Length: 245
Image (cartoon, rainbow, N blue to C red; front, side):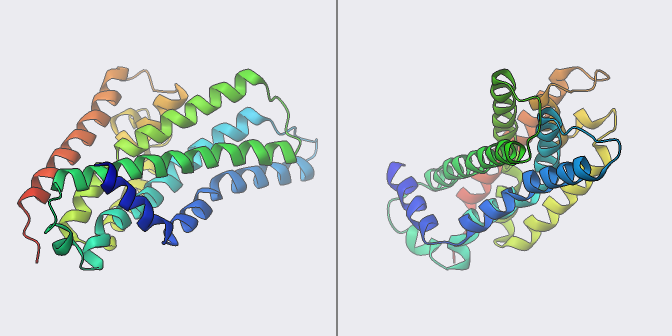
């Protein structure tokens, strides 16, 4: 397992995908901070830009709009690479566990997503400081860091359906289509009282503590857990039985 994970890290070092993902993850904090700064400088009477609004809006854009397609592309990249490079059949001639191979990629995916989440939070903090936004405190720094970390972990758990789709179709396109559809649903449900029923929106509300009281919180937690487990179990079952040509 450790050797597989190390190999995945080495392959990632030679790839441009990581740099592209870092750039993509910077979009939300940059866009939100820039919009708030422009509004602060142009609106009359003068509007004071505050850090709590910056962090909240950044999390909304990052988790609901940026994260699904970005995480989907990363997931598809990791799990389709051996197919596109036609190296899977050679890799499996070595005594390598198929489950171990899937798991090593999932562990790498976890660190990748969490690093991008941390980047988003740090950039929001940095841009807000450069723009002289108000209201920052140690308590806010700690709270927002925890919220972003939870959102990142929940977003990671929701990648398992994309893993399955990638393994079945063996390329990027279906995964991208699905994540675009998820993003559209996120937008439609963002202000709905039923948003807690959709795992990708519920992840944001759980992280920010804004679940709608219409449904018990357990419904959202169970939805995310079931989505994650079904996706992972189906991925393992399919990959173990799939023929490699």
